Length: 219
Image (cartoon, one colour):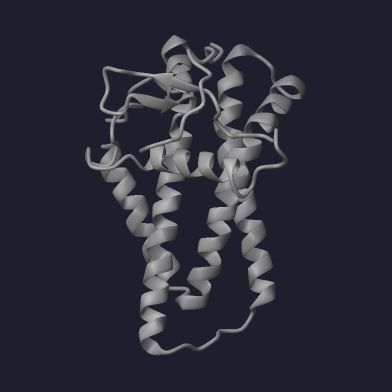
């Protein structure tokens, strides 16, 4: 079920973005990429703020994570979309071959990022640990690739490299889990701690990571 849903998201987003033409698809790709990275960076502080100042009951602690993550993503996408429309309000012609390659290439990348981000957001939802074919440790796209772990790895890389703020700046997901019984033995803490929280109940706090040893991510 989750595999078909992800494939549908990929197809629908790709088709819609491709209709914007090469330049439009390129602008949307950049907007979605930046929006997703910023949402991943700020959703936990926002969820904590909402839990402390709006509704702080146990059940809402987990709900705020998913609401903040998806809400920030949608908000940033609309903001960047408005900015890019004002930067380039007119249609710009390009060579027909470049037009086709550009619009479908950027559209496919945008669709994949959107699919990977939304799959990652599922980890934060107040749902059972496993549902509709979704399993945190599984390659959730037909057992072939794991878009959520790819996105987490990319976010981790960006937070450690190009977007790191100072020598001791914020790193998105520094701690890690060791799972020797799985194909991937070194895991970032994000999918495991959220899976543990969902398994413990909607109001449960995420457990601390079992290891804080730093390691390169490999998905």
